[in-house]
Image (cartoon, rainbow, N blue to C red; front, side, top):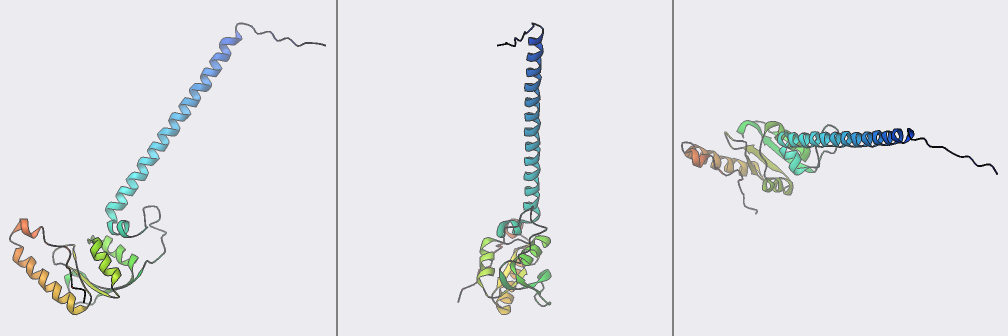
Length: 181
């Protein structure tokens, strides 16, 4: 039986060690590049989320819309019956919203505030009449036009009275409660 004998010469060992070292360095470099890429992508995602939350606070708070599905989100939302009077003018023709998500998009575009209590009132009623408190981005909500008109006059008169007092006028209530009859 013939045996193959391998002869290892002394000058090959450093070459093998160098190749192993280069392979290890390449793996470490690739790992560092991957981790840097993941970190960069994580920061980009966080920044995109942060900007979306600033630009669309109502959609972010009350829907499943995010920065990633904002352009393609197609569900119109819950059925609502909202009449919104623009520019705090309750004598004008209202904008009508039959679904919640178009209404939320409108609020975000106009930079109008919506609190969780107000959102519950909107979704809890078969119909709402809404406008802004004059000079603010806060809402007045009524179940009927007459109730909206009454509440609107209350808060607009209060705003006129408290206007000269800056520390009080900045703390005006943004939620106008109405009695549930």
